[in-house]
Image 1 (cartoon, rainbow, N blue to C red):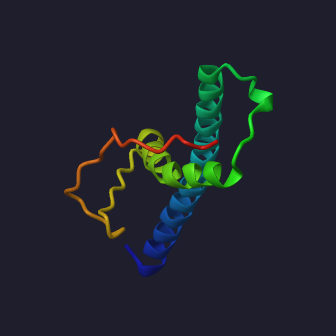
Image 2 (spheres, rainbow, N blue to C red):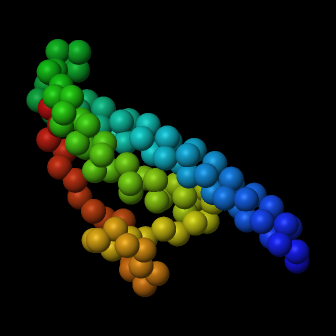
Length: 110
């Protein structure tokens, strides 16, 4: 393969990755927001309050989204594109690390 053809192939792969990453990142943010709203609605229902009368703490909602968006992003990359991205605690790629699907999050967002 000539250098020019290899470059074009690498560029095509890079564009494909950027497109896949962008789409899944945006979708993962929407899913995280959806989950946050569902948690608030469930808590309101448990407390017997009307959802429209609940005071929502936007910072807590943002914290929840930021804490879950990466997990949804990884799941979407895996499910939609077959890409398995796993990082260790130092945010370094680790091939041998198992994906933990049972992480619990603080649902105290209002």
